[in-house]
Image (cartoon, rainbow, N blue to C red):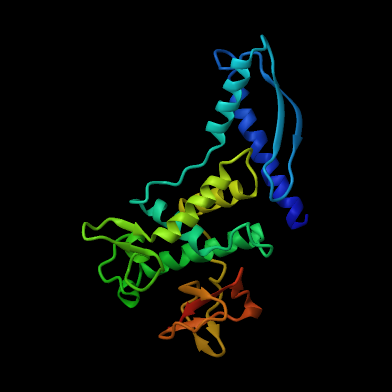
Length: 254
């Protein structure tokens, strides 16, 4: 299945799942006579078009109720910023190439997010090595000085996101929740789900780079083509998949 076919398939499944949630409780539900799907058009990069018929007495009010219900069920919201899931999800959105790019690939985006989440998890085992001495959670790791651009803590210990980055994240959320679910919806959901899940590090088997022993797994990343971070971080070779969606990933020397 090609990238375009996969994007269309995923968007279609999301729409059908939402329709199912609306109609699954006919007895006492909002639409006891059911909803019939008449036409569904899904294309890559555009909002899907869903044409349905609300069975039973047809009124403009009932049709508007369906649209409002569909929008409410389909809408995605980021977790509270002051939680690990909320901070991680926003970091993933800030650091991962978006569907606006012609280079975007959903499968690669998932691999990239898995690697990024893994780096945060790994750093929590060695927080002092990454400017986060005493860190006890993922927020502490992400907000450590000089580590993740645009993420910090204020004097009250609350997570703060740079205004420009926050605006970009808000744009992704707005695009995801405009119209029927599409590629932006899938991208946002991917970030939320990854933040909330235990992931598999795509680089866990990298235990040596150029003869240098490493701890394995992902420990950091930078935009491909920019200066290396130095220290004990070692670039994972391109041949080993170390560059994903314009980011160079790094593992750590033993």
